[in-house]
Image (cartoon, rainbow, N blue to C red; front, top):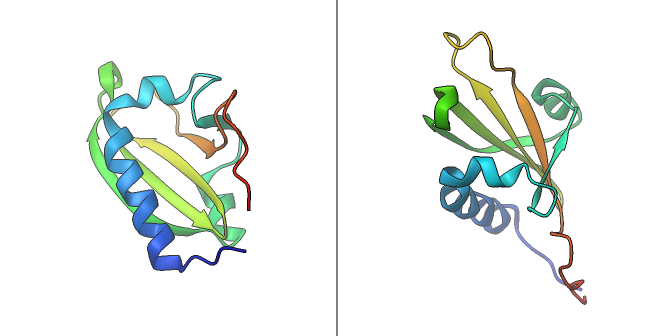
Length: 107
């Protein structure tokens, strides 16, 4: 059985966040590691998820947005919060999942 410290897991999420920031368009695809989820950031925080990283920056043609990564135990979400000036784009959350076709990790 593997035990991970919260700090080590948070570091892994932050490292992954930095590497995936430029690929937001690909993360919403069904074979990606991020699956769209109707849950809100507020609900996640109320359910005990903790913010482990916030990345601010450009979000393609949609303008600027903050990407907030939250985690609880072995579950992680990223929520994209568009800038206040971009009223057309809604906030969206994505759950980290095993990519389709990936082999299961043995424990």
